[in-house]
Length: 150
Image (cartoon, rainbow, N blue to C red):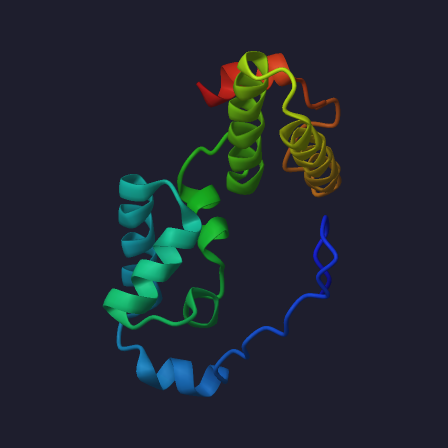
């Protein structure tokens, strides 16, 4: 898939292991894995990092193949999460960039990056509104984002 804001054509991704091999390789049952996911979530607050730790330390290549649910689905069922992680990370990035641009007013390159980040936020927001994860009247506001992130 092509990159969004660059001229790169993208790279092909790696292939997943067949589900039959995963089930044989993992000795833990789904309840143990879910409790491990929640424990790691409480420590890190990052679903991607949880997946990396499960893969590297515990040998669990795909939580979805073993449990039938993804890491974010497990977390959202058991814990109260106000905003999806990817949207929250983009809002943090936009808030930090706005603070940078207050000090460095003539930084044109980062002004462009801020526009791109905010367009990503709006695009992802539309997706989450469609999926009913965010309320239908949700709109990105930089001042609200500053309060949410801090």
